[in-house]
Length: 197
View 1 (cartoon, rainbow, N blue to C red):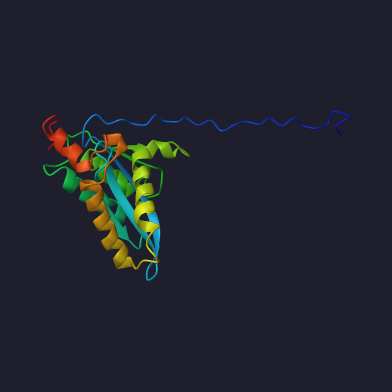
View 2: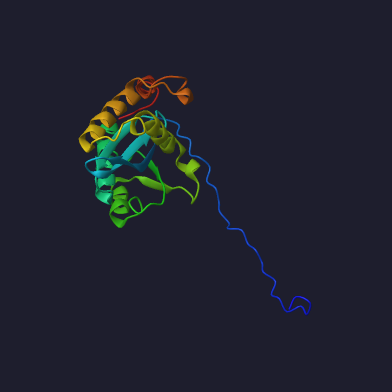
């Protein structure tokens, strides 16, 4: 068939993907990131940990650990973050929320909630973990310092250790990207520079 020119020429095409540039916030509480990981527990199976992070200060504003990974758990984490980060309300603050294209942040209920609150959702491009880099970096630190060092934790033990780590991370953990300051130090320094309410 080849000698007689009867073979079809196959055209190979590469997938065309646009890589988004990483969003750089100019002030605290401007850009938030949300994501989830799962950790195996001896008495509950997989536990799902959702966290919402302020990209400017790297502070964990809200989180939720559950044995389920539904939209409801993501909304609980988001609502905790909004209550902690915006005591006077989030409407009118032009907040951006960065997430991947998972089923929870793209669900109708999550989209509607963000729309009602005036939160602009930004979805990372496919196969581009750098698009949600600050959130992904937190989860790497969490896995290295909590999840991977625990020896077959129980569900309640995981919750307790995670809450302890979040407090330590927010108040004391030095970040090279923040000039080796903690998220709390960066936020307090910026209170006088930006109108954060």
